[in-house]
Image 1 (cartoon, one colour):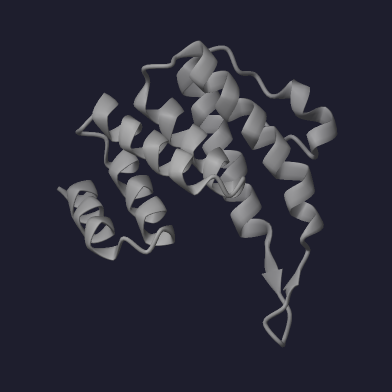
Image 2: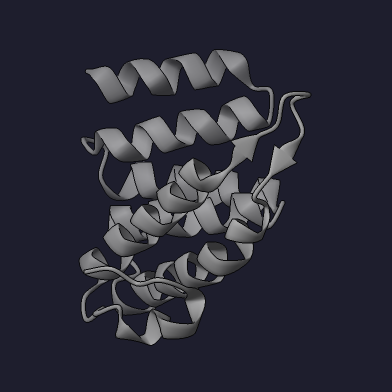
Length: 133
């Protein structure tokens, strides 16, 4: 399935918490990979964010609404909160994702990313190691 823009995002099928969360993470990845950097390190192609993040945000919210106790839904929602600069809420949601499924490596990995963003490097290292276990 290919969705070209946020305009036709309604074409994204999303009927379960897992599918919504997976699609949200896919859209966030699309956003991250969409950035390009110029020769001086400046960001170019920032308009790509305008097309992808609202779609991902909507999908993450839908995932949490459909399956509030699903680890991947909480992980996707944490992505959304981090991109909205809601650091503490993102950390709380990432911790919740791990608590919902302690054996989910993606939840541990994302918690490590959030902890790195908060400069809690010791905890980030522990979360990254837990993701590899």
